[in-house]
Length: 256
Image 1 (cartoon, helix red, strand yellow):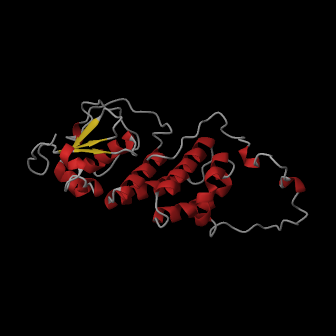
Image 2 (cartoon, helix red, strand yellow):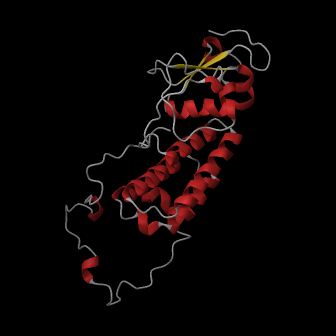
Image 3 (cartoon, rainbow, N blue to C red):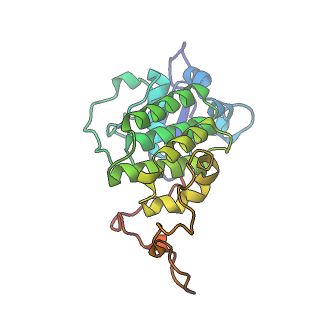
């Protein structure tokens, strides 16, 4: 499947493919992949399957993330919202010449914040520091502009982003510590969502140093006894009572 290169760009010499179940194959110039591919390009060296086939399969990466990565390789930036690309022309051969198409709506899969965290995880996984730095800036600027998420959709997007980050990034990552401070700052807005309590265990080590202690002791008479649910064998946890977004299916954070 490999072709000979010509100059800095020339003919595309390696092919990147989303996953074995995807029919779409995306071409990318070898010279650019060498300079911006991080660990991806290493797969085409030596006696690896990628070198033999000329194809790199991303089994745990969404197609949207791969498309944004290819955009970044050619343009040093990537879009928040992707165009719907024709499978035959959705190559990185000449990213600037990609055909115009109707934009997708800002759905869960195409929410800017979720796109940025997936790009950050992708860059961390494949050791692409320049892309990682770009995504870090996009995430932090988005949250700085958003402030505390006020509506349900914004809260769920932030929580989903936190879930992806704390599930896929190493504990020492700087972004996790930044997000720990942010989560502690807007804890009041996030904890009203049951989804937040599902992932709170992963967040606790990062937010515990920033949350303020309670102003009241548990025996303080100002605290009404009904605030503390009594124990009953076999009773469901209070937070399992999904009082928000009951009709929304929360996407699992098993891919980026």
